[in-house]
Image (cartoon, helix red, strand yellow):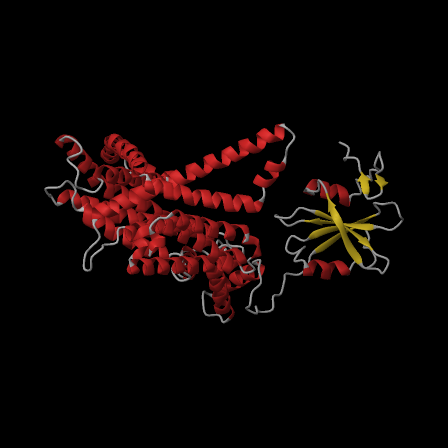
Length: 563
């Protein structure tokens, strides 16, 4: 397959295909097809560019196509399930997890063993994993410089009054095609200049070699200080988990930058290597603290998608920390030689985990929705504090399914005791969003109206009107008939007395005798003292000093005067 020999035409073809899809992105009718197409050209195109001659191996080519189909299927499901239902969490989660998934899989494909029955060589995995990062970085940097030069080109000629180049360079077709082709050619240039990529890699690895002793000192000092300060202050912060995981993740990253492929000479003097090993022995303790901190939040507030991802990160870092600790315990001629076996296995396990959490059955919203309902039914969450709106509208499709199932069980009197069911039934009825469950007939509390002065004609209408709006119950409303517009016919001001609703609503009677809502009166919060003054007739009607002006469809109205 000569096409895969990293020829110029191979990269030009990939760049043109990517540019055409970006250009015609608005012509895709289905969101699922759009997501699948974008995933194919971005992920598939990037993998083809990085693998190049490796695709001549039929097994690698088949696995690459299978991986692209898997990514397309997940992207299509996430797009249709997520954005179509107003739920962006699935898309954000997929974007965050899809990048490391593609990165790890591409490294394994690039280092695929050439012979049958062979295992991956750790040196090849190390070389591919670190080199791919800098090849993509180099291509992005070159594409950015190309864009800046085009911008400079257009601005120079704009100063001369020639806008032809600015119009062409800002057109959608030019941007999509040119940037895609330049990025693809820059990928080829980076892959063919191993010395440049090797130099960038060497700079980063030298930085890791310099920084690992510093983070070792930080880790050991923090761990040694814990017995004297206690851990309660950690639980009280509310953000201990991300801080601790950041420390552990940075330590593992710098360690692997120093370890490299495991065949280098000893990186430090013997005493400093023992200090690094002591820091590695502290990592499981820090991960356990972060895990317990996350679990306290889950026990207190329940599982949420973010807490689910936090626990997942804790589990991943726990596995890597235990593997590093075992590498320290298992003495070998090569320093930390156990990492050569554990790192590939853990990377593949993480890839499988990243795929599973982006499926309908094992994603964070599914686990969270089930946990919220389970906590309600076993009594850990009170019915009064249960957030049915979060379950129905905050946890995507899984939350709606659990909401509907809970509604059905409540209607069949299968869960909770009778008083709790009535409270939950009322909550479910008030929850925004359409429900497919037919609730029991809801009988609102009677409307409680107090009229100040004589009742207006048609006053009985306010009972049914407020009953439909679930207003004027319990604490009730104060109704006051008064002529506010000077037309000789009284309007009605309704003062709502509920603790959560202190509005004053203005109603006016139409020509057909129906009372209709007009507006809300500003500044209305009727205190008991003012209510007594109103009952006693202690009020006055304030005429506006300046009238409003109507000019066509423009209305000029003065602001209310300070009294």
